[in-house]
Image 1 (cartoon, rainbow, N blue to C red):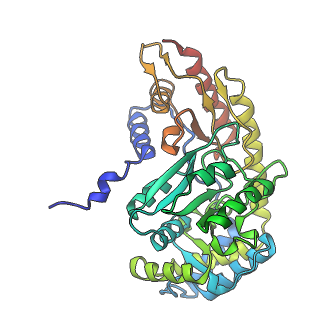
Image 2: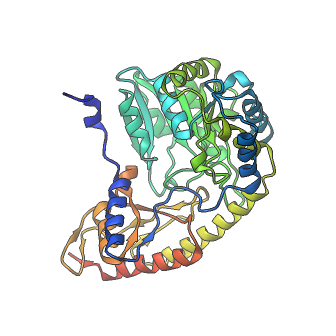
Image 3: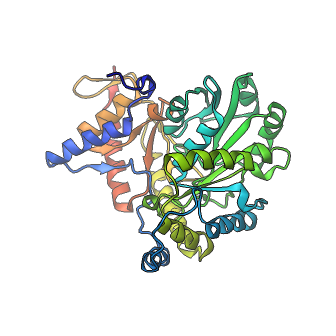
Length: 398
């Protein structure tokens, strides 16, 4: 019996392939240093956990409204006003099962077959696959190290066609750690306003910015606010990846569409997690700042060590918890004579020979790079980057 043909167009996850190789090496007793994790390595703060425990003890364990409880929606509205200077009401908010679910809901709401979604590269690896599953077409716009891995107004304008439905802007960015400045966002506004396209503004790493940088949202510009769909959540800022709470702030027509889809596919987010998320967003942010400060120290360490490796060039990324080195390791060969012609070859070589795991840039639409996550200890950062240094030192000209 034939399965859905769309599945044939979905690229198998490169990260899952890496995980399989890592597990195989670990079973052989190898010591592996991993730089692939996409989540904070901290526990959820105690007061947030206690809120979830209280919800269980209070028997708050039934279905809720499909797109979230009013308490959490009101807290999100207040947060957006206080922290982002954005005016919304509860009718503009939908709560989902993680920000990944938020984005897929939005894409299902927007896309008709053949519609185009503009995605700047490097991109979070799930964006194009989600578009494909919604029967849309991804229009990938490559960015460069010189532009800070950010799309320019001219690039956006040139990518827009009569079939364009939306552009996805992710700031702070996974995998590059890039953060759009207020001026850079302003430069995109005229193009967005003139074209009338939607903007999916993925702001999940909002609270993880460094060096005195600030997070800005495209929704802050009145002339395009009605076109902007803000996506955020509690996973990265509050170390709550397993609690699965994301949210959308958008025009009521988008929220109504999302509610229709969510009510049929998943129903409400976890009631217990909603209570914990309400506490996370409305409560003390001291633990968030502690985590942010530790991430900044780790970034500084990882950046300094990577920049000492000949053949690597890496920006001191001002956001998220990733670095995205660009390498000159291609057209070289390993001591065993194996050619290194792509980020996949490089990642395989570093894993199999030097037992350090990075994510190849090909997964993010940028084959000249690889991604490391510094959501790990100083000890592991030093150990892993020493192995990367040794790996590059062994490469020779082909």
